[in-house]
Length: 248
Image (tube, rainbow, N blue to C red):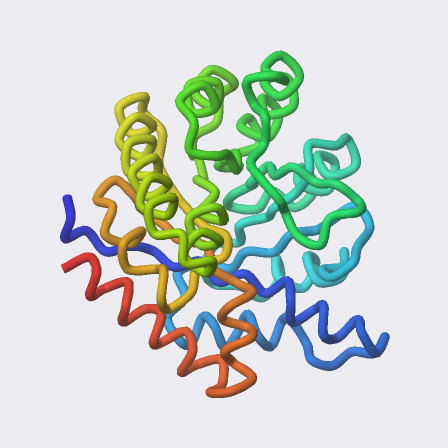
């Protein structure tokens, strides 16, 4: 299993963040998506937030029209977002927690505390042919709840692992990595496909990429930032190289 190629999803949200800082049309997230495809991305991730702080409805329209790789449509579990997803029917829908005051997604979705509503919310998306994932922390109760509500995929939140690494807290980092490994195995045993993402960099990606149960990593902010210095295509190529090397 460890030699199975790990997919890379490139999140283009923060190209839109830079565009929206000036209120114009440049830089274009669709151009970034096209470059990411050409650089070897296996999919494109875009989060349409309720406050539209970065990705816009028009961006989603454009991505659905132009992409030749799957779109992973991140969204909160709201009626508005469900309507948009059902209209577009993207390959994948990833349900994430969302708070207006946060700078970025701060943690995993509490699926265990919201089982009944999420099961009802997910059902029509599944019927429409969307592959539904839930973005959760590395916690057994959340993994088991994800299976119960009908998700096909769990995306494990790697933010704590990356934060501990950045802070030099090696014991805490390694404990979190062990949790990610254990929950990847647990999710797979329950019949879930396992993805991971949030905060991953060149320095942190290899130990996560080496987890044999993982099938996809979704990485955005770091790649868009690194693109300022080396260009988007080389930035993605280097991440792809590190992932492949970790996979062995």
